[in-house]
Length: 188
Image (cartoon, rainbow, N blue to C red; front, side, top):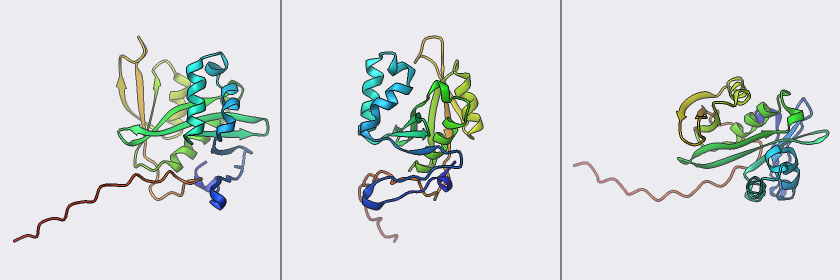
């Protein structure tokens, strides 16, 4: 989907994306939408208090992005920058009834367009074949394998290199200030 199908508006500091050709709107989730995201997440809807708390936190911190269609919220995605100071898709959840319709792909494309670092990572379990197929279709490359997180189900890491200079579909977080560099001594 990318930035070409989602428009950004900075009027009064709000995100005002446009609808894509398929009628799906991707934008940052509002804190008031945490309940709707819980409802489409089978783990959270099933009573997992930790997942529910994470969804609330992600929405409050502006880290969650939502894909909406005519029927409401279809999926959400979380983009953080704590993985070696690179973008990391912490969570991608598509409502069971919306799977296989390109919604996850649209969210990944939109998040990649908004990523402020040169590398964007994510991971999934070896057992999660649908996510692996989605990442391949969306142009992500395998980047490594980690054993020990989940017993008998290694974690596969993937890398995506967002286009540099792309205009994100919503305001990006302010960059962290860098310490001033020391002047270099003159050559003699």
